[in-house]
Image 1 (spheres, rainbow, N blue to C red):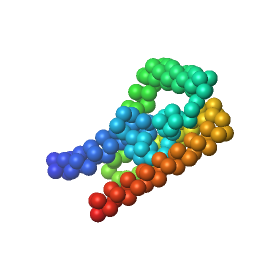
Image 2: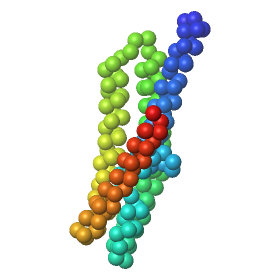
Image 3: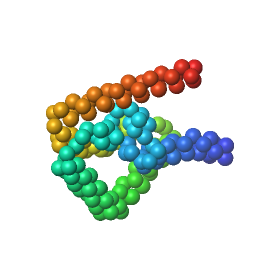
Image 4: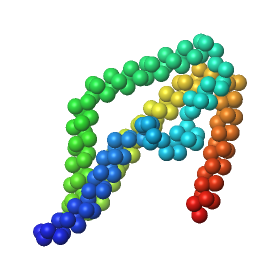
Length: 169
């Protein structure tokens, strides 16, 4: 293979590999500044929870839930670290093999994408389950207030997005 072909191939493959690794690392979680629309509009907002006039018992219950989740996540991370690293390496190798192949294997690409979607779905379901557990602590009145506050926040967010869109165009 000529050197120019190798360079072109590397130039095409590297962004894909790094982009995939970056997306895999973020995994849809809330990592610091990487919030996207999720951290600003909609989603589960702790600030709204503070405005619900929770009883001490509810606050304690929510705190226990958060601590239990945190401990479970910490244990899961430490217990499966080697397995996780091997899985990430295998995934990276699959992506690299796919993009560096002489011909594009659409079936393999679909299989890889399906695996990624499945993992993302599992994470989303787990997140929704935790949110449901936390919301089950609230009274019906608090749930109604939560919904109202969330809708107000969404309206403000839509306003901001429209202003940005008008400003950018």
